[in-house]
Amino acid sequence: MIEVFTRTNFWLMAFNLVPFPPLDGAEAWKIVGQLRQRRGPPKLSPDDARRIAKAFEDAVRKRP
Image 1 (cartoon, rainbow, N blue to C red):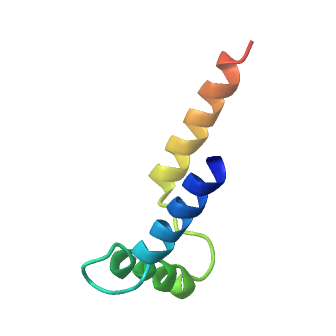
Image 2 (cartoon, rainbow, N blue to C red):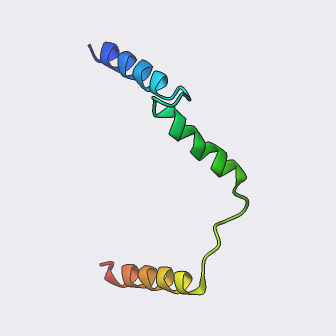
């Protein structure tokens, strides 16, 4: 029974990722193109870096 549901779900996911407009694949495959175009790590502003560092420090302090 698990195999039947798993196989059916797999085929539905695969069909839904076909890159044609009425299906979700038309939007999902755009992400792959964007990731290929991105080179290097994302650029952070100094304020973003400070905010991330503060959040990390706060998380470390709260650890038991």
